[in-house]
Structure formats: structure tokens, C-alpha cells
Image (cartoon, rainbow, N blue to C red; front, side, top):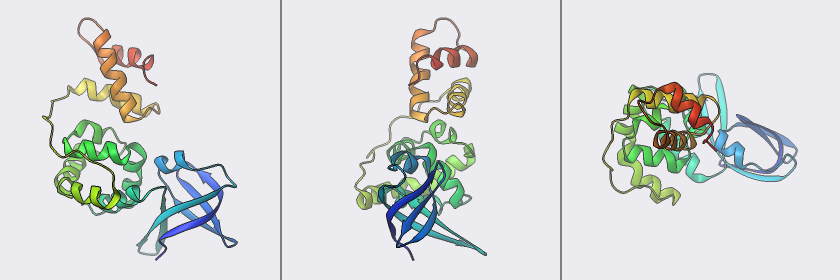
Length: 203
């Protein structure tokens, strides 16, 4: 079991990185969250890791923080969620964003992640919500203690968020831009009008 890698960052891509340790290049799969926090190639880096063995394939996943590794382990333990989907969820949401979506049962935020349908989002809430206190205890990342009222989000609003997410915006920025667009628009909003206005407001 490899617990962490500490060495020189030799290669970095949005989904993978290579860390040179003692003259050996260790390849690991990473999320966009970890990629964004990696230093420049050639710099010293430390990644906590988790090895996944399936049939004849052995993959090493790397994480910039213990919180991300902890959440990865919880995610891939959910029925129907494998390591690749867990990697995708961590790329679409930070640990804090995921914890809040889970605590508030915000299915719109969860399904905005590519590959996560409504049934998968419901399973995530059902199987992981009770583990939020453990996530906070182990990682030190504060998570919501109570469940806020769930507001039914119109389908067209979810589509607007998905549209912005597909253009590269984070779920948080997309949702914020959609809310600001709705506050400024007059009349009956549509996906097209909201997205067009939100594109000028998204960070």
C-alpha cells in the first residue's frame, strides 16, 4: 500500500500526474481539484494516495489533501459509483461543495456533475449523508450540521446550470450566475435567455 508520494512533479495533466520519487516516475490519476492546486512541473510536491485494484488493472489515485482522499474512499463505496466516477465527482465539486449538497439534499448540484444522474444522486444522499460527521472528524473540513429546507428547482433552471457547467464553469459559479441572471431578467425566463445573461455574469 502506497500512502503518499513525495518528490518532484515530472508531469501534470488535468486527469493525471507523474511524481518522480528516487528516480522512479510514479503515475497517478488525479481530479481537477488536485490539478488546480499542483505546483509547476519541476517543483517539489506531496500527494496522498489510494491504490485501486480491479481484475488485472492497478490504478494509483493521488490527492492534494487528506479530505479529498477521504471523500474518494466514501464515494467509491456507494453502490454504482466506481473510482472513475468518484474521480469525476471530485473534479466537479470541492469537498465542501459536495458535503453541503449532501447535507441539504441538493440533487440539482449533484446531477450537474457529468455522469451523475438523478438515481445516482439519490443513492449518494441515502448512503453518505449519515457519514458526514465522520468526514468532518477525519479531515477537519467543516460540514453543515443541519438540513436546510429543500427548494424544488425548475427543470429549465437545472438545464441552465448544466449548460454553463458544460462550458467549463464550476457548479458554484454556474449556480451563482443563474441566480443573478434571474434577478435581472424580466418576464418569463427560459433556458436560452438565462444562459445568455448568465454568460455575462459568470466568473
